[in-house]
Length: 322
Image 1 (tube, rainbow, N blue to C red):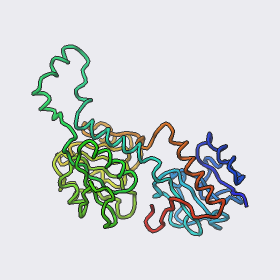
Image 2: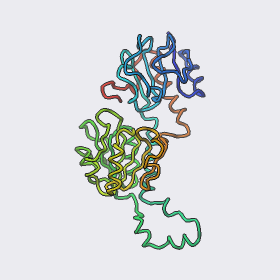
Image 3: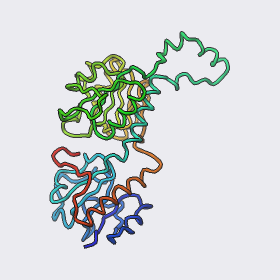
Image 4: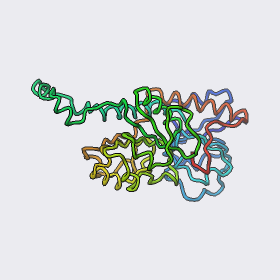
């Protein structure tokens, strides 16, 4: 039987799937509930955002003819547990790892070098800012010898670690399992408290699960190395924003770079929009100019397997949610 795909991804790439050798029927379901596919659809290609308003209980008849849900993201946290009933859920691990790692290294270097703070708009300002005493006052520094801590050690964290190590940083990490790092230069810590105690930059790369929700809280931030830079490129719900605000006030956190928040975006008037020590970006760390082409290539490889009845790649474990 040819695959029948309920399609919710980029319209420009739909024809590439339709031209697949398995001769699939690709049905445009943009804007429709992902959990109510058209009759006969045995696969759903969808963004994670299509599941944000999924009901708590499955619709009558679920999973209908659906056997496979393919997500365009590495995260699967919005997919309800009932969606896995009789269905294989796959994600797009690794597609965004390099762009996110580049984002992280960029904000880490910018925080250390303070380039946005030493820009000049006039000759007089250029002369004034040549004073070495001012550089000391604004803590103009560098990354070599600084410690970067990673929460999670998956595809994204590995790419961050490789780049940080190349800049001469010390890299530490924690992960859910007790297995050692496959990168010999990454030092594992026993828990989140040991990790934050000596890191200059803390990068959150872990998936959003029941165990990681609210992981960065008052207790954790209270034991952080003073002035730590927090970078969140995973999910906003990992951070207790009220606790982060208190840590910024106390100086335990010197700066926060947040590409994700909870909710997303934050409501109008939220203090982080104007906080001098917070950089908010609109969930852009994942982006690269050829993202959708690479994503399409990865999904087509899975479509090959689905059409041949073979095991799929990047299967999400319903017990862990990633």
